[in-house]
Image (cartoon, rainbow, N blue to C red):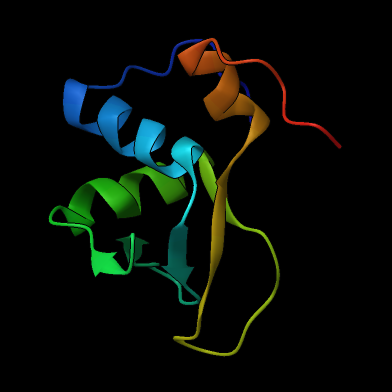
Amino acid sequence: MRSEGIQLNHRERATLLAVAHGDAEMSCSSEPDLFIDGLACCDQFTAHRLARLGLIRPTRAGGLRERVPAALTRAARAVLRLPSAAA
């Protein structure tokens, strides 16, 4: 996904930074829920939007509704102007 033209509000940026910090998980579903430090994100609408925009992704496949580690995509890192993750 291309990062040009993606407009994020402060809450969306803060959520992405929380995912970048680590210890984020997401559920495996068509509208994945996001968990930070083991707690459900207080704004699942934001989590769903970030997933639909291709800014957060699961780091591995999982079963339906299973929680798996979450990570930023390259597009998210570009939007936040973070260095690329080590491969």
